Length: 436
Ligand code: PA5
Image (tube, rainbow, N blue to C red; front, side):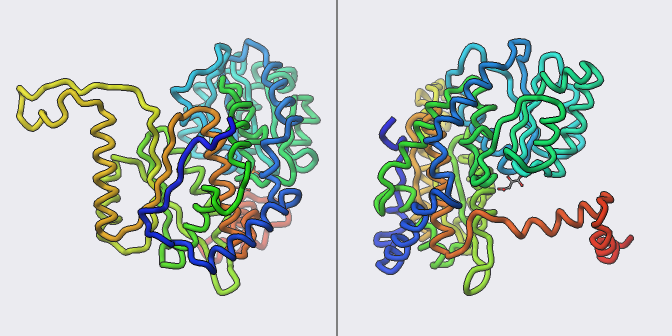
């Protein structure tokens, strides 16, 4: 895989979108980002880490055949990338020894209860993933499922029935892994959670599901070649910033593919958490919104077409669809003749193209991202494209795209409510605001 397996086009948002000043700023930001690959921007090096790949492949091979199912526990960057890849690759060919991989990414008691019914420690491998090793949701899930394993198979079950993925040194999960003797894979410390999908965080579960993780890294590596001003990820980042300057405070990822819904959720986390920060001249960021075509033509489109002019939409399309013919049923009604004997994707495309031109004519800017094949290489390439775009946008905005200090406050209050020693003042504040 040497070619980037998608095309990005910003023509419909207007010619000369990126002016000279923005081009200069982008160029300087890009140089800084590439130079930071040995520091904060370590995600740029991940696809070339053959050591991590080989360790992950060996760990996949070592999973005993009795495990036909896998339960991943995690949230945010420790879950969304895996969910995005599993969904995108749903119809891609998988290895024969593939396992059924499910991801529990929330603490909704109803979802936990469903998963308890599905989980059987005799045939289900538990894969807790938390980079920090301290996340409330993941550790709560972890307590529930490790208890089920222990009650059924004792301490040996905890040792043999679990593979943990966490920081090489820090956090409760690392210590638990040492205590139980279970296998553990490292999350590279310099790679932030939402930038970690191509580390063992995503590679291990995606590989267990039977997909070719080497090909995924190959696709990622293709995007990392020749990252210059003409590169699609650089054009996309500068294009987003240009639109932000023109008032686009909302970024819409509009995929005409059900398989890319989770990719939109993954991007929303990446874009929202990375860029929503205090900037030099006040708060910056752009609200991400995921839409699905053609479904959302009957939902969000009215707002996009005639509501506030505060959005930049990226249409994401793929040609990788099965051929489904529409039969001629026009004998029932003449209106059905329009679809008769066409392929479903012709009708689907007509709806998307119609919407694109409608938006263009209404002076609503759109970008386009076209994907041919939706396979492992493309998924790896898309992850990398969006990570470069996000990190570079952060550098252009002169904020740190790799931290998330804003999410800490709420966690402290939650620990206070749950009774963590030393957090009493946070509990007192909660009582003050919400009533004790
Ligand atoms: O990007 C991030 O760092 C976060 O969104 C994390 O991925 C998320 O909070 C989960 O963290 P952890 O993997 O430490 O459990």
